[in-house]
Length: 406
Image 1 (cartoon, rainbow, N blue to C red):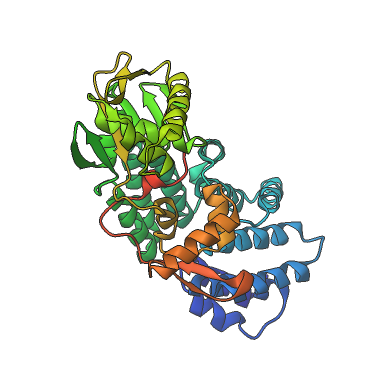
Image 2: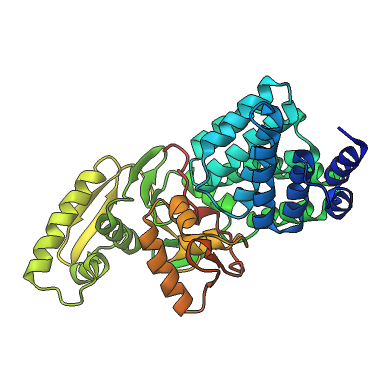
């Protein structure tokens, strides 16, 4: 490796992309193309950076396995930053194996951290945790170690383990200081804010109040029967019943939970579950059928009994019934939660992260755009969506992830 390439690489490692470009801007050999691509990525020109890294990988040729693997890792990182979640994860896994086989522990560990970050973004929490467990943080640079700890904190937050999240954020803060990166330090401080913002609303016996993340954790451990409209489950202790694919049953469970210890009138249940304000006999018959289905789903957690006014929940062993709702009532809350990270997202990436069809996401984005809540730029497949961060509350519970015990 010649002196200019060495100097450019050192400049990049020190966080000086302009200094790196000054040394290799006029060169078109493989190493220079790769360094230019990484420098432009650090400066925010992601499309040009991706193009240069692909050119570099071709220029290195099939025999230069390790440099090509490094280019693949850099391209995967650019894809994550630009929220292109559809890139082939198998390519990153192959690059990680190649780097490990050639003794490049630092870049192999970095590839593993990127894989865990990708899994976290698309809601595959168990896999992200397993991937993170295979990595040795000591092999990571301070900048990569900051990202590693942020992923660990993200997993802990989604599992409602606030103490573990605080510990991971403390380690991330220390690593960011070692990296001497203001951007990374700001990212860590923003992550800390999640722990001090309202994460959900607690609705019980006609009263509402907002909860911090640690208060949600305490509620889940309290033994109360919780109708969790954020995660679309009903739970008490470690027993969890998912109603994610049963929206009518979830609506009924929420209405019954909000009415406890009283009964929910039949007319209100029909309005909540079926969206009808006209409770004729056909709707009443349908309500009886759906209540029977809900009774069967919740048989281990609660009974659902008929009263003169309507129906009422009778928890088995739980001292109270609590409804956990989003911090704000918003039809598109989970979509806005993803967009609130400040990055630009494609509709395909949003669909992948939310586990719904791209067409569904496109309809929701069109509705939000009509209400001036999101903006788009670009056309066709290059179209991206952004929104200002949702102020005042954390979005952790709105993102896809299992609750503890699921």
